[in-house]
Image (cartoon, rainbow, N blue to C red; front, top):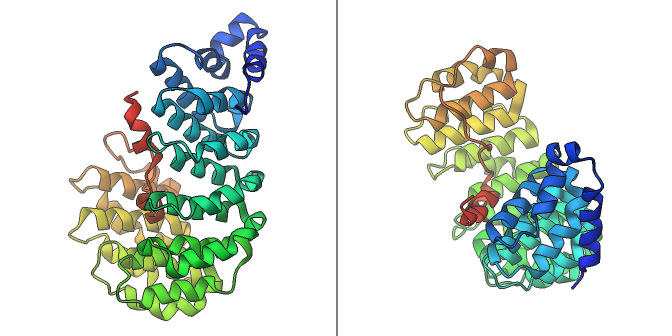
Amino acid sequence: MKYSLLAVGISLAVVANLPADQKINDPLGHWIEKIHDPDPKVRGTAVVELGKLGANAKLAVPAIAFRLETDKVAWVRLAAAGSLGKIGPEAREAVPSLIAALNDTGFDVAHWSASALGKIGPGAKAAVPALRKFLKSNVSSNFITAAVALGQIGPDAKDAIPDLLEAAEKGMHSNYRYEPAYSLWAINQHKQAVPLLMKMLKDTWYHNPGTVAYSLGRIGPDAKEAVPALEHLLRDPGSLVASQAALALWQISKHKNAIPTLIGLLKHESSTERSHAAWRLGAIGPEAKEAIPALEEGLRHDRTYIPHYCLEALEKIDPNRAKKNDCGPVRPSASWPCISAMCARPASFALSVMNI
């Protein structure tokens, strides 16, 4: 057990010494007091709420890690892993607990523990050996998360390069090989990263060209050799492929056809295509100002979430113009997820098992 009751007690003692009015008004102190409640719903809620405080919950890391290590309720352990990830680099003292949790068989606990290690970043370099092993998981979401985490740790994960090369070239989860390929770039701009992604675009068996385009876009101008292949994808009728290729082309070379393609997709018959096009125009930002009329037209669409994403894009392109538009009902609480996140399991879904 990496965290003793003494360590947790220190956190509680700090809270106990706060003035009474500060304890009442301070969410950190309030939720640390609740984290050892005998009711799992109460302590699970406390763990989730502490995660929402992000780096400001650094003081709670020992208590959250203790829940991850010892709680008998799987979803509370899952919530603990997710919250440590939300705290990010400030949760680095919980790395030993998260490494141990990679062997947790509770629902998705290991998956979110790996994700948290990645969000901690370079401070989680001690986890590299365990993540290399996790990369060989026969569960696709674990494979993806391990690859992402190694990339987020960065240069300190260089020992994992042989594993990532193997995973990108012949990993058992063939449709998700784009993540280890991108992580090769994230760790040390490995010379094989772009060629591996290019090969995935050309292989006829590969069914996720949009995700490959997404990875190439993240690499940026150094992926310029992929421009011809991405131009070809602009004509791809497959779900979301053209919009992701358009954004990638913009990220790589500010391609002249990127924004017009996305504007055209705002009129696609698929509501999902329209929403993704709007999100990606927002990702481009003020330079996508020619899309403003089409986005304003999208605000009048009868599918509720399309106006939300059109307004969100307008706010990023021209905030003053966005203020003049009324989006109607309350918008969704989070931005449209990237393709990579959809391939894994969104935290909002995983934490929904708590029903709180």
